[in-house]
Length: 360
Image: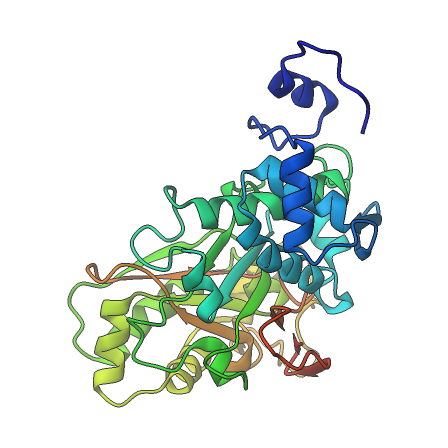
């Protein structure tokens, strides 16, 4: 890092260097960086991963600097490291996510005791402002994607619109208010393991239903949000996320429905007709190679939003009051989500891929 003349306004200097996400950053003093490197396990020159599309080397010192600039605490460091290791797995295709013209941004969902220990928000306004852990964990990831990966808007980042999650997009699952086992437990981890899950995603699309007292009514509303011809899953298949608010989750579970039941219902009932996706061929004959080969392409053929229930990643997140849920479209078949254990929580990190999702 270049020497800074005495008396320099550090905040403005970092803006001039182009090392920020558009907001002021915390100057990374030597003491703060050393504390962050220690939280990462020491060895500042150790390369954790290489970050596309520039494929810059992310050493622990560089990661520490970006964590400090984001305003993160040292105890957040293992979560950010695990998230970046997940994002740089080949299955995720971070190179494509960073450079696409689509608005996709990496969404991080944290499960397990570590999320609670560091105070991540899984409840009221979980996707919004007001929580330091959520905000700075997501921001630290973005700063690394910019400063190490080179994903600068207008340069290697070609997103036509972007979305606010490209500042910070990190939450935790509300395990305390969920009627089901936590997401990571249903995927084979122990309840006292801590994990990160990453998916390339659009912003949350609100689903409101204040009247239904049965699973079908609530899930039909979510199907309605999913069944448009405008989101990437409709035309490119792949993975998506669904967030069930605690009130909706309790209503669904009260009738004996499991998480898998809810995902299976959504898969079976969220679809479009191929004729609608093809605009009835009024712009020329459409085949759409992005959809799975086994889908029929007759005008009245049903085209599921995702290929299987396992392509729907369902989480319980949000405040206790309010009958709201959300659909979060993915980027399409070009990226697979990754679920990874956080180092230091006693997790076996042997790699395996199941149903298109990479579990570590």
